[in-house]
Length: 178
Image: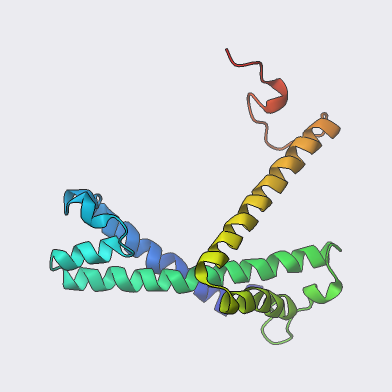
């Protein structure tokens, strides 16, 4: 059973900033057509500042609120996802059983959620945003590289393993470039 709070946060995340950005992109498809491109360089909020220059106050406010909601909801969704990943890993025996403990009232993985919050919140409060962004990018790159390496190793160790998805022209079947 999915908790109501989780469903509500996903609905808010889906219909909040994403739909706002989609609606704005329908008619503001190119900022360079509205203002000279030189004014957009090194601008932290180019859409909002362009709308301000064009005196679109109400639209600017909607875009600004959508962007702020996105800044708050994306980390929330990532934290919810991380707790669920640890919960599943714990059920599979890859992490200690305490990570699969479920709160009796809210039916959510409480220990995993608290641990994810502490492991992200403490460094986020101590490090500057540039260092934290670099660490996040390095972690994402490492995760993708690890999965790619695992796929290649599995392909060579177990070439006859049944696969649900086959990529045409996979690495083991590629010929030299001509």
